Length: 493
Image 1 (cartoon, rainbow, N blue to C red):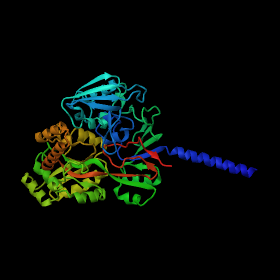
Image 2 (image 1 turned 135 degrees about the vertical axis):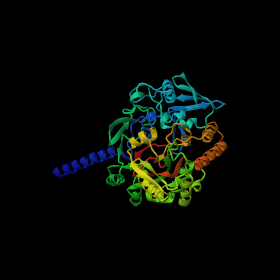
Image 3 (image 1 turned 90 degrees about the vertical axis):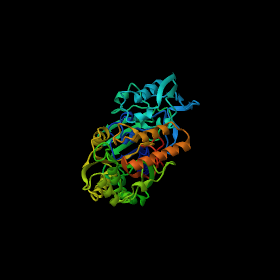
Image 4 (image 1 turned 30 degrees about the vertical axis):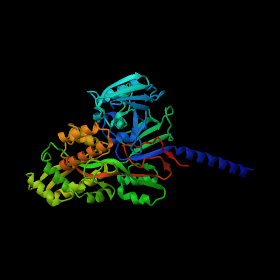
C-alpha cells in the first residue's frame, strides 16, 4: 500500500509541477538594448520609450498595425467631411485608465490640445500642426477640424507621441505611466528592468500574457549568453549580428530578419563649420563605403540607402549612386571647399552596435581623405541631451526608427540644422495631398533633394533582427513603428 501511495503522491507532485511550469509560460522576459530615459511617449524622442509602452500601456485614437496599416484603437470608427478637413471620431465606451478614472472625449481634447500647445514638450509636435480645433461633441464623440486637408492625419494619430493621457496622471507618466492599454505599469528597477502586468479591467481583447519583463542588456555578448541560458526568451531587436547564424542553426529558437523604418545616418551639424558647406557634406558621404560598413558593423545585415526613405515604401527610389563610394572625388570636394589638407572634427557615438562599430569604420575611411574624426562615446541620455536637444556636436551616427518621418528635415529646430525652403515647401505639399500618385511624385522629389544637399550621409536601413524562443507566437516580424506590441503574444502549448 505504501508504494502505491508513493506513486500517487509522486504523480500529484508531478501534476503540480507541470501546472506551475505551464503557469510560468504566461510570463515573458524580453531583452532590450537601450533603457528609456522615462516612460512618457508624449514627452520624449527616444524610441526606447515606445518600445516599452506603445500599444501595451498607452493607446491613441488610432494605432499602427504590424503591416504598417492604420487601425482603430480608442476610436472605434470615424468619418471625414467631403473637404477632408473635419474628422469625427466615435470613441469606445466604458474605457478606464489604469488608475480607475474614466476615459471620454474630454481626455482626447486634453491630450491633443496639450500636445500642440505653446508649452508642449512633445518631441513630435509637428504631428499636430494641421489641427485647428478639437471639440467635444458628447462624451463619446470628438470632432477634429484641420487647417487644411492632411493625407497623413490618421496615420499621425497612431504614433506613440499621439497617445491619449488623462489630466489626472499626465504630470507623472514619466515614472508611473497610466494609460488605457491591456498592460499596466508594474515596476522599474533603474538600469536593470521594467515590468508590466496584465490589466484585468481592459476594455478590449485581454492580453494573453500575465506579465512581461523588459530586461536592459546593452552588451551584445551578454545578449547572446542571456538568450542561450533562457534568462531572456525573446530579443525583438537582437544586437549581436555575428551571433545570428548560431541561433539560426538552433531549433530552440526562431530567427526573423525583418524590416524597420530605421534610416541609419551619419548626421552632420549643418550650421557648424565646416559642415555648413554642402561640398564638405558631399565629400563625407563619398568617403563612406556602405558595403564595407554593413559587412563590418552589421555582419551583412542591412540595405544601403541614398536618401532618407525606407526601401520597402512604394515611393522609394534608389539614390545610392548619388553619393557612391569615391574617395578621390571626396578629396577633390574637400579641396574645393577650402580644406585641401583636411580638418579635425568629432564624432559622438551612442551605445547601439551599429553606431559604435560603424563609427570606427567611418572614422578610418574619413582619415583616408584627410578628416581626423575624434570618436566620443556617449550614453543614450547624453546623446539625447547633447546632440538631439542642444545640437552640441559635429557628427553623429543614429538610426531614425520613427515611421514616415521624412518631414524631420523641414523642422527649424531639429538637430541636423538643415534649412531648405524648397524642401519645406515639398513637405507642405505632401501633407496637403491625399492623391496617391501625386504623393508618390512629391516623395520622390523630396528624396532627390536630400540626396543632392546631403544634410546627413545616408548609410543603410536598419534591419529588425528578431530572435525568440520557438514556442513564442505573436511578436512582430517587421517594425513599421518603434514598438514591442505584446497584445497578441502567447506561448504555444
